[in-house]
Image 1 (cartoon, one colour):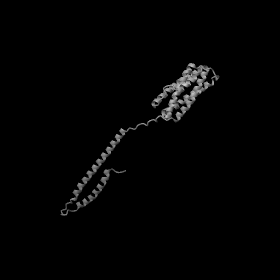
Image 2 (spheres, rainbow, N blue to C red):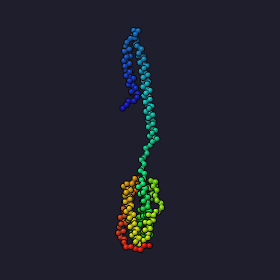
Image 3 (cartoon, rainbow, N blue to C red):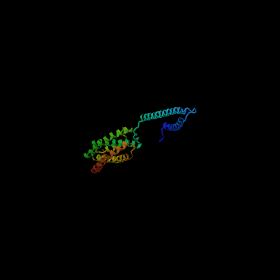
Image 4 (cartoon, rainbow, N blue to C red):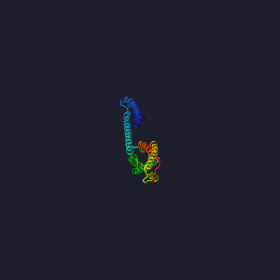
Length: 242
């Protein structure tokens, strides 16, 4: 550790004073040239030099104290002016944005198909499936919209061609055939959605979207299993279109 400047200045001064003091003692014990037994004049000169040296050391110590005070004030000012900020969350990647857009359309398809099945389905279990789709996907739509807004990701607001084509393909059928086409479409949509959600849960960049995809996966898998059970009970013979 480097000693303060005042200490380094004191040491040589004390050394000089020690040597000079010895000389003074010798002069004090020796009579003056006049032989009157009085001490020599060197003692007075040393006293003056000692006072000057001590004053210089005191001045150095005061300067060092001022420097330390200035450094402390500067450090406090820096800590106040530059507060520690929390680390920002990763920005949503293009893959995250694509996931939001695709999932928004998938949910729109599920809700549109469920609304059609509620009116046109023949079997009660198919209508119950449509009710489950409406409830769960309505909740998912609200959650996804909030996440997209928080991450400044635009989402589709108008029905695109894929939504319209999917709904039209189901609604061209009636009766038991409508039931089967609807259930088959729901099953296919969920197979694709589960794969998309799994990839997002494992590889997504934005933590909120990644966590949401992982939380929603069990619901999608439950939908798929329920749809498979219903499909196994439906007749497969063709029935006339509308």
